[in-house]
Image 1 (cartoon, one colour):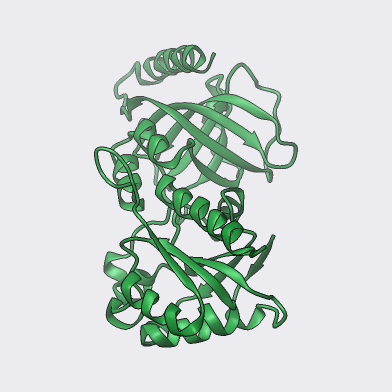
Image 2 (image 1 turned 120 degrees about the horizontal axis):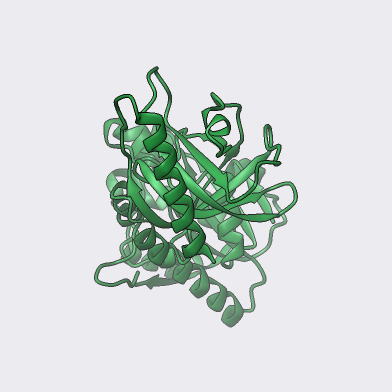
Length: 313
């Protein structure tokens, strides 16, 4: 897999390709259908390379930052998922106001034809691009008739609604990690490097791997059952996962994901990149108060671990 971070990085001798274009945030099942179709079109046309074109940052972050959505995946995650589901290479277009000003025909000339030598283009049926989103599948089809590429628009199925990144974000905001997983075709994951926390979990008998919540989405505050995977070894471990700021204890804290690997207190994960996957929602966040707050918290944590163990068995 090659990931190009600018059109100028695409090799001049790339040869003919099939191109698929989109934000591809999260690479959900609708995106996967487009990628599968791109692979099929490449086979039919006798083309060996499928290139997925995505954008960073999200166009809204440039054009309407107050409405920019929290992203479901980093560019590294997105690229890996695009290749897993059918792309050979990934072109990340650094989105800017200049690129936003390009007419759809200019985007086709510079990127689709000029850089990627497209023989076929596969996009979602609702795909829009170019200045003021003036480009669509019909325009691409007209361009392709003149510039020697075929175009396929793919309906993004789903039920009871079309799969979309917006739908996945709405599921996560409600703590519905099961719904998000259905739309993604896999568990939603948070990837990050384990940082040192306040060690309260260790003091309470439940040492956790702490991953700060940055600019990438995380489920609603609460407790979940899931898996922690070490990115250095690939080891996959069952976990009870807390998302939030630990409201029982005083003090200003940033939002984080904390994963307790079931029945393990011997793990040293500081500085290790981990992937935390969410399988099921156990409960919302509770603030315990009063003289017995810590004891009540420990009892609740024991129950959370028991339920997580049952769900993941």
